[in-house]
Image (cartoon, rainbow, N blue to C red; front, side, top):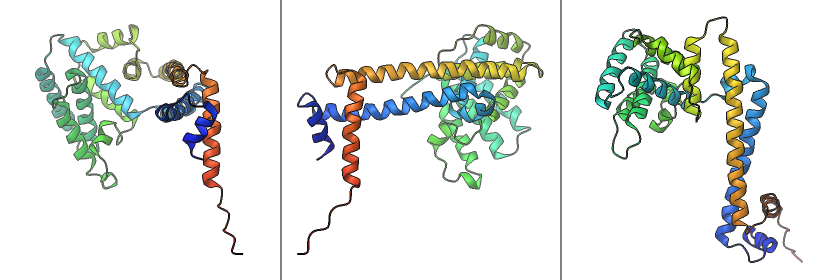
Length: 283
């Protein structure tokens, strides 16, 4: 019996084929969200041991770009994309005077690409950030171990470590400091807007730039506890949306019942696939 027939035997004719497979897809999404939430719940209890392992280079790159954008607009609220790019090109020249390795130059161009990404906003047409992302990709691929790296990998920060992105953003901000940086960082820390992952990462970069050496560890742990709470709450919200979707698709059945019944159907189907076929009689 196929999984569609198994599901219909449980739900009768109330679910269409499309609905059944929709619920199955939602079940997978629900399990992934549950696993993600549990990961952050564990991390919440062991922040010092799991801090770097839980941080994403992609989110850190977005946070760096958002913080850099804020700094540029803090200095010049009416800044155009062209003016921002000119300032960032000047920054790259300053950084390249000390960075001679391709990996180092790739990181700085990745930072510039994320900054321009936030300044330009989403557009269907080609954006300026792409040329810096491409440069970061080409420089990264000079490392023999990264020959298979794709441009999409670079967009998601795959070649980079989160802690390195924090350090290079600190350095970029200090190079661009015109006497107002301390005021900007103080504003970010004391009036944070923490709506998404990028906001949390931007806050962390600002926090670590501002903290005194003897208070840095405590500041990071406090931030991480807050970030874990954010991720857990985010997972709860998404799980609730998934459960609502299951209830809708299964015609009002409680999500727990719909999940349980389809889960049993799936197990029976997989067990049938794995069960060895009986050999035909030769008599």
